[in-house]
Image (cartoon, rainbow, N blue to C red):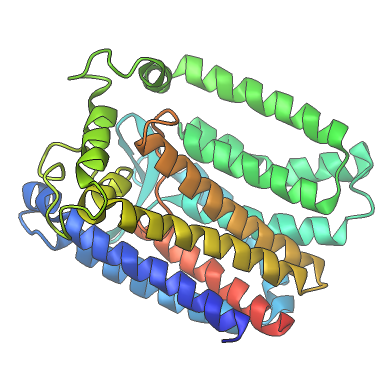
Length: 361
């Protein structure tokens, strides 16, 4: 099978697996809040998966030269959307954060779109300014001027998890483009300071860190979610209870179709199902590395490696957090968790990578 077809198969296997698990994990939650067990699944199907297929087709057939011309408008639109979440009448506040926009019947999370806009524009800018990048004032600093508004606006929502992801993406792109390690280290120092400051300022984020350090403290309060996640994972055993048979998703596990969907997967499909999902992510990472190695176009290389690094990191953080290996975050499981903005954006970007894979072969 040609590499681009293998990549497409992996992507849609992940997305299909995600739809099945959202349908299984969201039924009780949807019934309680919307009076319809299929409500969340249908939204994910229409506004996430089907919209993502349309985006995938556009990404697959768009000319690379045209895409590069559109990267700046996409970045500007993303910044505007991130600003709009703070304005009354456009954005709405939930759980103390301004992360969503109401657009007709759907809610859009601009940070999911902005991360990929940052990927495409950053790849284009660095590919065309590679020679100047080692110079701090002529290359490194100008790139930060156009790239940093995205993570800073995400941090202000506040969305510390996606701030970290977008900052990580900037680091990946800079390393790929050959920036000086001393410049990257300075940026990492500043980013770490902002992250620490944000954790200290926002009590709920600090509470997550303290809960991670002492998960047995306050089992009915701050430690409740991680304890219920671990119960779900542990009760799955090798083969799981069976698809649709989770007990924890019935009001015991917070966000069973969102951040904690991996716990439902482990409970219903066991270690085998969990390992299968992890294997798909590893396969996607390997495919991305191979695709990148077969193309000599810098923009394509940066986009491909940046995309698989982004997906891999998000998957690693989500699974580790749900398993108690990292503090709980708001990072969703790519292609799997409920969230139409995330799924549609990832499928659109996947179309671009599939086109790059086809050209490189």
